Image (cartoon, rainbow, N blue to C red; front, side, top):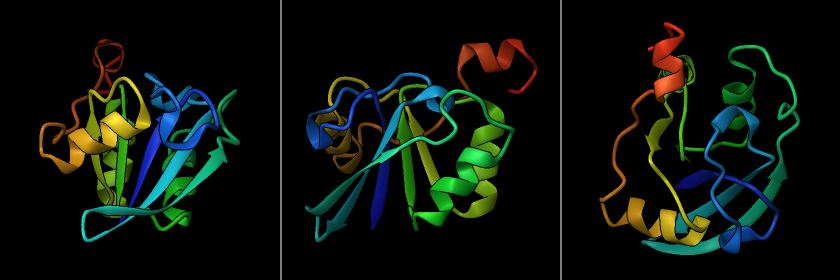
Length: 123
């Protein structure tokens, strides 16, 4: 399984989770086998400064990711991921490592649109 986590820096599992999915400077892509990390890749977000709806979910899909974790995510992004067959979870915080452990432990389980997205009608 491959899990991508939004990140503020390119420090792998020690990076802080980025709270705004669309403007995350990096994605940390983690390969998991039998519940253990087998590889990590730091990928710069080519759309961090500006993007059209669906560009980042398409980019993540190209990385063969199964799950996307973030601090917050808009409703439209969640929809794009769902259509692509990629599971999402929001509410991630702290380090990428801590968020990954929370997800694998079942305490970070579902995505909900961030308040800003709901306020803009993208719920």
